[in-house]
Image 1 (tube, each protein chain N blue to C red):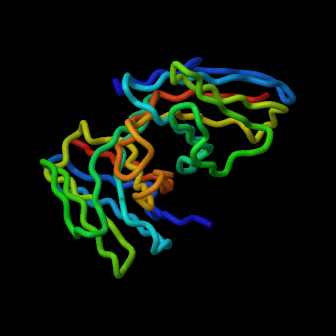
Image 2: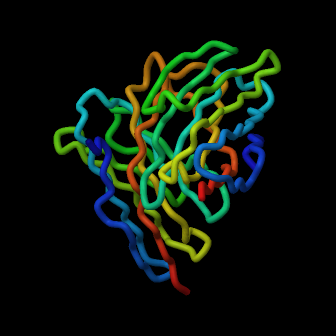
Length: 113
Length: 114
């Protein structure tokens, strides 16, 4: 049972344009959501997070949007840069007690010059 | 560099064997988490330790076990290995037990079972 889904395995974007990565979840108990970025031969790196009490969180070029009613979140990268090329994982947790992260399968982003 | 170290980087072994993966958390972090990433899959949570005590269990097989030592490093033991155990194994650490603590990941150990 895949509780966190990233339905697009890959995305190609031109440098300077917006990248939008999507994530859907099924468990309504999730209340904390994160995005991780992963380069080859490295572990995932935390990028940005959002609590369920908010619908938007921004950090520089990265913005995460949360639509609780649709159980959907998205990561916007503006403007996209070639160095953003990586695999992006969406993750969710119940936020309190213990932090077992449930990860999506990832979306490979390629930003071309 | 996340500050989390994992050894070895690569491990090749045969079916039926036993291996030990090692993780050193970031300085000051008390929680250690283990994840498994199989081909084209997301990371699957295996187990969490906090200050030496098991805190949470995920999809960890009975053939797998882990522990966290007094110096807070952790080991993941995989026994009676099967072909399907071939995967990337990641360790992560965080300051506390949960809430919204950021988990910092190590570079992973790639296990290949032949």
